[in-house]
Amino acid sequence: MKSPWKIVLPALIGSISALLMVWDIHDQKVIMSVGMAWDTGAPLWPYQTPDILLFAINFPVYLLSTGTAQSLGLYGALRYIVFYPAILVWWFFVGSYFDKARQTTNFRKRPLAAVSMCVAAVVLLILGAHELSWTFHWWWTYSRTIISVTDLILLRGLTPTIWCFLFAFIAVRGASRRIWVRDVR
Figure 1: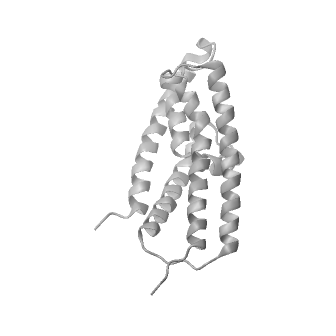
Figure 2: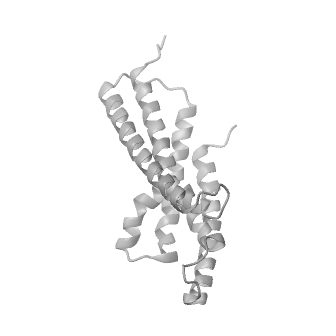
Figure 3: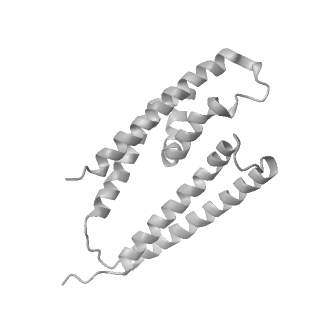
């Protein structure tokens, strides 16, 4: 019997996120101990890397829970009090989606739902394309090297694009399931 994704994904991504959070908390202590010794801020590697990777893996959680953390006055490492449970809940729902996708289900025709999913997909594609053009414009202006530390900044910039394209794909897939109905005979 296969392990359910709603258990595996929160455990796996939660463990990776916890390690990245611990690494980031350590780096924040190092940055605070150095003070203003860095004129241009902390170096990307290793001091900003855990935050960038955590952002890339859990972008929707950042988007949804940043307002809550700020309204509670949680900044810096304290924001992880809100982020970590939100990460576990998010990946539980993603795992539940994958578990349901594994099951063979029949959908009823719902043209209104399909049209709204297609509209959402178009909006997400436009947002993703806009972010993609802005990110590559930045990268072309300031970096231009293929393998460099600035690729971490490129990853931070491309993260919303990747997630927008992924959500657009999921919306189109959901719309197609509601348009093309299998025969149940």
